Length: 250
Length: 256
Image 1 (cartoon, chains in turn red, yellow):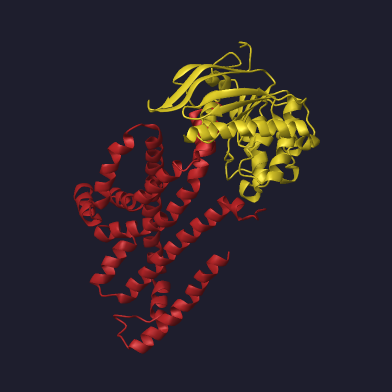
Image 2 (cartoon, chains in turn brown, green):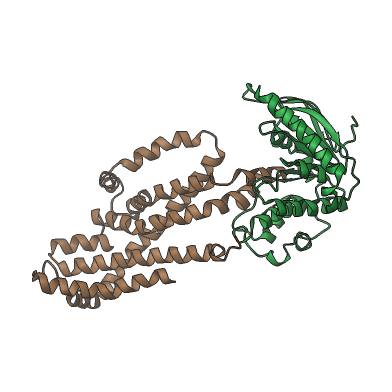
């Protein structure tokens, strides 16, 4: 648990650094609001902020689930359907490199302010690291293990479940570390384009109203969510791979 | 050649990509309950031959039968157990669960339980240890336990002690021999060590390389079970020296 103590340190030192920065820079509070001002706003607008946060979370988590379902099923299909990977890969390269801005605009024009475009943006942001790691992980099974399973006359399903998946799992967990926090960024980007709720929407609204204090509050919430997501993945990681931490005899 | 043998290979040839000739005209008949060692210089196709017996490679020419059926068919009946040079263990499974994997897959009902076999293999205290927590020798023992737990009639061992120090190797060899003697399983062992081959095997097949052929089959006259004392006896040392000089001949002939 030592690795999480440093996050506590950030939590404590951030307001101090912030406070010193505002005091030293003498910037007006419309540009750099002091921490107590933002704290006050967080408290006063807590109901509305909470609602927007939940809206963003909904998009992020739902999008992330879809992204995982797609990535897992595609990576597994690559393993068993000959030639599929060669056929699909150019498409993933192309789609991945279209600017999100362009895709978002097109989606909003065609689908309007529904949850659809937002979910698609979240999928686009998180899907590729998941797919790449899963692909690599599913092929990381040592040949001796595959040979052993063959001489035991194992079915495809047994080979997958007992040998391939366990060796892919560390790669999959590593992908979550990158991709899960990306789902929040994806959701906020999507809401920033076109939405009537969520943290991204709040950013647009606060910008037009010149409310620096609320912008800072949103930034704080977004980074807090990311940290919580990240720590969640790390905790899950440590639980799943608890067996790794024991002592070796060598 | 008796058709009722455990392993019968006749006129067996194998080439890869149609160009690299790994094995040529292999004729070998292994009786049920026999222990045969394959020795020969690197690149003589020992591993390829073992993989053919295990149904992991198909011969280009010739025929191989394991208990009267094809190797694949024998695998289907869970009659084959293979221990590879690299331990075939799942990192995230304890020793116990790694050994149990062979039973989960084959559905075999073994005479000895997983716990019994691990006890017998000297891993009783380390049943719940993960592969990375075991020493090299323990991992190899767990690896061999995985190959034996489902009571296969044929045990194929590809240099399972290759990476170990000499003493551990000798001890594991003695121990393996006693287990196989007791269970009457047929065994084929690949090794680089002439001492080990003479100590353990009933017969030694000497392979010469490029392409891999059986250059000689040597009967080992010492009665089983063999004691540790045999290692320092004159007959033993002479036989080892004789086989070693044959190996030198093969290897030097290859260099010309």
